[in-house]
Length: 570
Image (cartoon, rainbow, N blue to C red):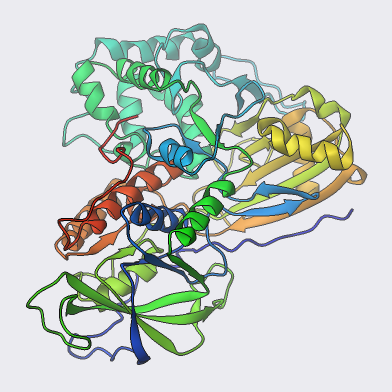
């Protein structure tokens, strides 16, 4: 079958700043009119990605009836699925870091099962070390595969002198990393020390760990250079534990102990059947509890309108919980697949004492500005790297041995490096997630496999990917030749502008913004652009914000949420 191209268009962040739009300030345009009497709901959730779905579900667990609106035509956001080769597969996020209990407890309550990846672990595809001989004759140019080291977090080793660490970074670099144990715990952790992860790892363990372990892993997972990512965003509590325990390797060891204590030795997991099983279950649970989930419906503006105890239409603020009013309009696609949806019809009014904004940064800042909830709506927002994922369903007996395990990450040696492939990662999906392999076997026989190659580096142009490139990269990375005639199906999926880097400067701006929002009763702000990237971080934050919103104005309301909302370090 000839390859196909599918375009999953998640919410994107098409600029670095959002213009001041909205209402109520001198010289600003009026709010667009909305007709009819307002509908009343216990809560309004704006945004139907995993943050919004999680928040709405948490509100139902507090006995509330929320309305959730999503301006795009589907819920789940970056958690999306499609059919390739006749088999349903995750197209975006496919798993979560096993950190805390926010995700796993939610999975348990929803009656789903947590599954760990199979295949014997992942690999790193790295260039030769400086002390190794280099070969330019072979197609791999001397680059080769290394297993992920056993005891590590984000590639940071708990035992720098372990054999598997030495094999990857070399003896000299391993000895440098081990000197972390001789440093004072305060080194690299003081308030005036650089807050990015790269500086922290370099200071404590040196360039070898950063360049050959942490760098490739963080770039592959978060699509960002660790030099621009806040250490506290990727690993909450890691710097604090380093200072308290006296070394980074001791702090990593503590993370691994906690993970094993929870009975989960793996660093990542998903829901059995695919991560979209989770978002589908969240939507179903919200609707079963009396909530509403509306797609192609966007919030156009938001304003406070007094108190819930006041008579209808009154702005009397004398009693009751604070009340918020929003105009909701049907939406259609924007000018490009990654652009924000646009209103295409008349708006209606909704009132609720609680509003959770779980939408993209441009939409959230527009709504907050219109509600006079922020002083600087032109807040610069980091823009993520363009990502392209090319999935291949192929017939190849040679892949039965899982030559790269569950998959691999490719080191970024720079735009002018001699890296022999354009891909930054490869996942052997039919090995990593056994249900995909079983479904492919049932449809196409035992030699059918699914490979996914990922493209897109920070600061590089939008990747240009086609079948020829994907097959050439797959051959170098797996050592298996796959001819075009062996391709059963393929799909190209792009995610432009997603996964914004959680820089230290952005985290500080978000902290100030959320402090301001916290002063407004019944209003909460969540989502990846404020919580940080990664399903675990987003879900934990969304659950916490929903609990805060759920108790607004009603001290007698029984909040029955699972006891997982305290800050739990990795």
